[in-house]
Length: 316
Image 1 (tube, rainbow, N blue to C red):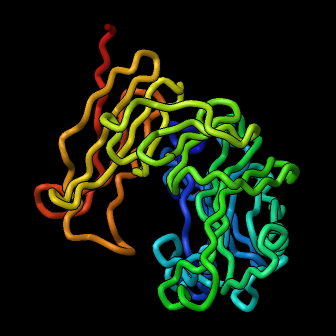
Image 2 (image 1 turned 45 degrees about the horizontal axis):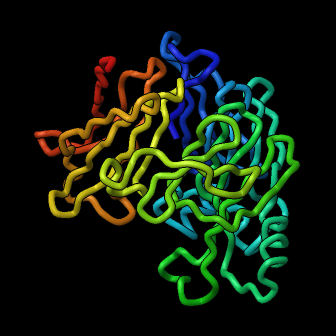
Image 3 (image 1 turned 90 degrees about the vertical axis):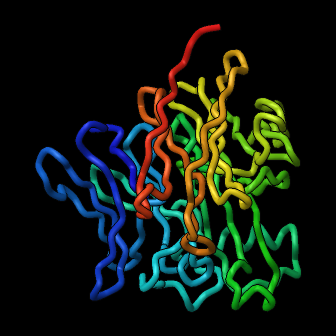
């Protein structure tokens, strides 16, 4: 959950930390020039951490990573305090919005509300505890796309229903929508109401207002695994899909230019012997100048490192 601060992108970044004595998670704002933490966002009653910084830099979404560690380890922080563990759908936990400048937080939507909405569609729903993944801000910083889930823990998988429902909600708390159309587990906002995702073997554009697929990016030949980790450049012109190959044990990246359909595929980057809850996914992220992508992988000396792929574009 490392995010450059959009208001001071050259020198400041956010990251999550954990108090080793209490297990409470919190978010830190760090300044490189000053060489220190200039703010910590700690909440004693509801210790939450950053789940995504809004593009305008005014707020970040925050969630309970202790709950995630218990219900889906790969997305949580081990030994983090889960302060809502006694309830399967707590009223005081869910997605929070934290004001970056004032440090104040507010509950955007609770697990209780999500549970009530789910039961309207499935009255006999029986689950072992809801959790939230992928709190994604849209490009206008006024709406979030996220998943509400249950039944993903190996120890709880056979004890209740498995839930995997995508939702949207406006940043002011209105317009909560549970979507029936599933577009894969690795979506990315495009412009306006559009979210990039997957339907079958296609990389598609889904309109959250119309609640239907309205377009497609590239072809299955360009994106052989449209369920891979994806990222859209800040200017919206470049799209990258990062996906793994079990035979080569490497991640590959298909870079696509939306203006004319030009694309290129990278060489493979080793993901080593990591798998399961400590696997190395593709996880590409664009820089602010739309010409380089940050990716993870294994270096020649066997250590886990970050790499940069530079995109050198030419006009047709």
